[in-house]
Length: 343
Image 1: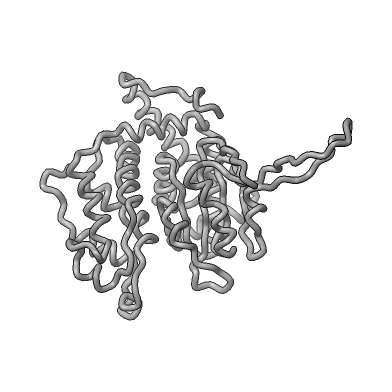
Image 2: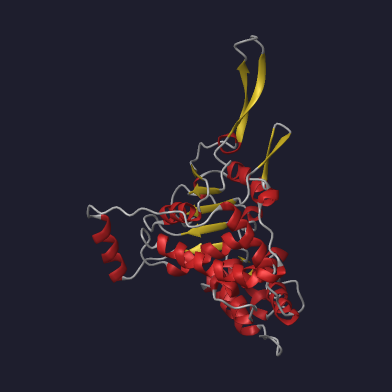
């Protein structure tokens, strides 16, 4: 898609676009609920990531519909979709594509031709990403950060909007590799999928063991998704609230003089600047999805868990005391004071 073909947002019709976004949100949720039962908060977080233009890591035990969720959201958004099944023998060229020699039958001459890999789609499902070694995981880094792929010195652009939604099983399971910190930092959210309630599980069993099959229809398009991404960035945010995002991020770094004592005791490395950037962007998306035109400190607090849980690296003291990154974020929110002028 050419960026010139994307409609521009005029200042006078922002309210109209916001109303359209909320209609699409309801339509997408309706489509997703045809195949995904429960997990409304997970779907909400995935929509925030897509509206911001980020990438997300979805963590959960096998059989919790992680793969089905990603496929369903891609269909509802009307975007092209490829699934990459990560395995221990997967090579980087299996993801990015490679050059091959082809012969021109009319002339008999041979020439190098680039054969695109499965990464050339708008939504990439990196299924069980932690089942492949770090060398292959790193094949996604350039695509996630810059939106293009370099093969044998030549760069190929990826069609916008481009999203990587990776699933992973907990690293304690056999045959998995921890993701490198540099790659983890490129995921905007780490979304946790947990077991559903008894009633929801009963509904899943009854639905999937009958003859009924649900179909998902596209309710938006790539151009509209890109327009919504522009809309998110136009949401105003008070300086006191954006400063609060920065203070939350800085407080996770044990070398910072203002870091709480529990950070210095339990944390080896805090979050990067990306965490503060994502807090602000996700806060804007959260506000618009709820029909508000301002970002609150409560938005940032709610979003701090999926944004920070995979960026905080705890030490052996935390492990011995049973303190994980989730608990660190909870204590952080309690210890960093909100600005008095915050919304």
